[in-house]
Length: 144
Image (cartoon, rainbow, N blue to C red; front, top):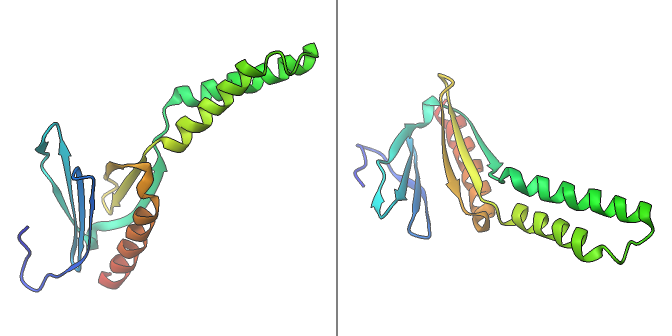
């Protein structure tokens, strides 16, 4: 990676050889590996960054399965056979919970122009992503 004059790497994150996020004292560099080759990375100057967000990238069917499980539990309560139908609604609620817990995060950077860039990060790297967001916010405040 080529750095400009007077630019220093503050922190570099590499996740499963697929995603590299590098924070320097002047910019944020994101490189994402897709389909075996490096997708064109993008470099964001910190003076253009307004906000960083992290959202859960959960599929919509996870909520539907969980809702179905809860409705099944209520129906079983009304019928009086809570334990007879437990294998159905219990499995649906558990499956919904597991899908939600294992879904990845989306790291979103908002520019001063209102444009947004986002990248997916695996759910196991939540703490590193929160640390990165804190570092980026501190560097943005320092640059501004």
